[in-house]
Image 1 (cartoon, one colour):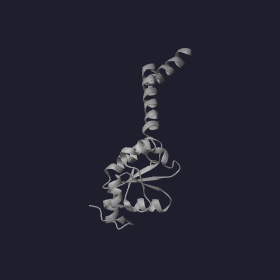
Image 2 (tube, helix red, strand yellow; image 1 turned 180 degrees about the vertical axis):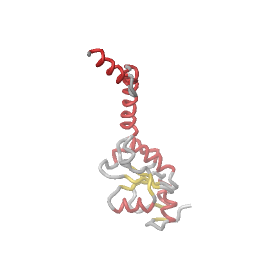
Image 3 (tube, rainbow, N blue to C red; image 1 turned 120 degrees about the horizontal axis):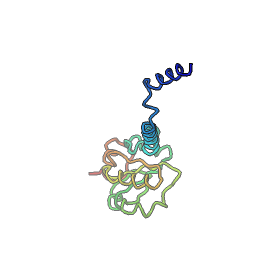
Image 4 (cartoon, helix red, strand yellow; image 1 turned 90 degrees about the horizontal axis):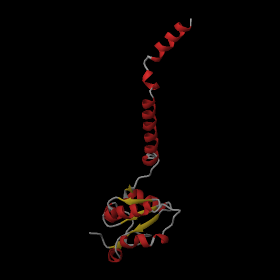
Length: 154
């Protein structure tokens, strides 16, 4: 009797998933699962991550709802034209002036065309701030006929 039971067990072990009994296979599966979990942890949250850039119209709406508008252009550019209510901190001064920015508010970063504001957004994000860059900068802001002070940007 014992031999018949043993033959049935041997037959089951040689079935479709017998390879899972191999310790190397088990370790391999475990490694893959761990890599997937770590990848999700490191690179995940894409479903809840906010955009790093927004249109001027969206940026204006955000500012109307209480977001902080940060202009990262130079003083000379600021003197020519700007979005009302913006605070000027030139990009090259930004890393040393982070203490002047609110940690508890969304920060909307703007510049002339959108390039420096992307850099500013990245500096802020890497320092724990919630920040977005305005796509197209003040050129697009002006083209979208949003509130503006000073001469037309060129």
